[in-house]
Image 1 (cartoon, one colour):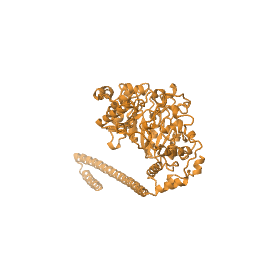
Image 2 (cartoon, rainbow, N blue to C red; image 1 turned 45 degrees about the vertical axis):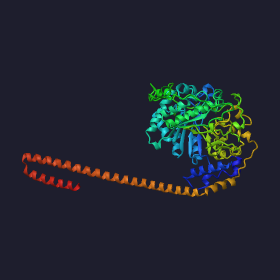
Image 3 (tube, rainbow, N blue to C red; image 1 turned 90 degrees about the horizontal axis):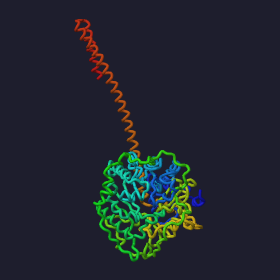
Image 4 (cartoon, rainbow, N blue to C red; image 1 turned 180 degrees about the horizontal axis):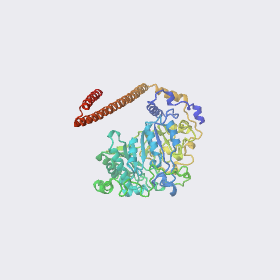
Length: 605
């Protein structure tokens, strides 16, 4: 147990002990989390609303701009896979699930290659969480897997990054375009077999890069053809030497033009297109006028041709040709794999070009120009505005992740955000060494929350392209990771200001608001509903028991009647025989017996 947690008296105080509300706990927790974030509080007596969970350490693909590409060749393509252990998952179920509303599975690595994925997915749904899955889609290669995925999720995000076979297979090394299309069609069929209100939401994702940006408008057509509801474009965060050559920082007009074209196409096809804000052009740059995209000409090559057959030729289940079907694998995981194969080495040599030097008036400073030609929303599209994350012109960095979310990795590491470099700079602790409550309010977490509120945060946060839309500069490894840039060094000798009694008072005051009474009423109604359901089940069981009893009695009566009828038939046969031979005394006697038996049988009926 950390000294700070003991000092603050946080071990025995949490939302559960602050209120007796049971089923409303998640709503209360979410409300207090938002209030705490808005107030800029470092100490957090609530718990995360959103959980992001890595269940697999590795990925079966080798995208050249991803950290996976930095691993030695022998450790790529899913080799050396390690999964989140059942014991660690159970700890997360106990300590984090009861407060959260949403769980996203897929933070680094490919979740569907873990043999535990189906179990974790089902258990998260059963826990009452809204489940979201991020995947490359290559392993959803049977109807059974597609059905499980769609049934258990609120939304699915599939990373694609191209609108053609050539571009997809060049970027996502090891991926097969035809296999991806087959799997997306499989997901589409399963979704369409369900009522509209029960269907999971499908998003196709596209990393915006210099080499693929011109396919972004055609990507909208592809997404529409495979039944997606939305496409999402994000600027590349370079993690490899190849990735640094793909940034659009020096091709701003090109990026703006094709993002705008994609938004317009989305409006025409009725599909949501989510993109970053347009770049503010540098001095001397001009808007780029691109030729109208010939979507009809693109369709046969990029979309229609790939969608003719529902599955791969000679491969009805879409199983990888090399036989290495990682999906929901049963193979033993390699005990000799590196401890953290997803991480970049801190000793890696500098990569990429010099950082782009920009003045405040070109980025997000207080004097940033309000040029409507560049900052207006794209027609038909959705510009990523300041919502969950946004940078402020007034100093504060409005990132809610450390206050409302948590990122949990397969090896127990706890991170405050999803930035690819966070595991090198923002490591908050490990669930193998401490409880989640202790980590959630240690000095590192509190300093980061307070620092973001004051605008005094590590370099990673100051240039983050997830917060800043568009990103102010290229994010280079050597500028963000290393001595002095990690959280522990940045806030060295800095004591958080959070006071436990003040924080408890803050929570209890929030719980005294009028809406708290409403939550109590909701809980009361929920309990009544639960009681009615239990009573209904008891009535059903009682009725079923009575029906079974009546059925047994009826079967007994039917059997007795059948026996009487058989006996009567036997007597009738004897009577007929006697009549034939002229035996009068016997005939008279048999007739009387038959009449008596016949009367008895009718009485039984």
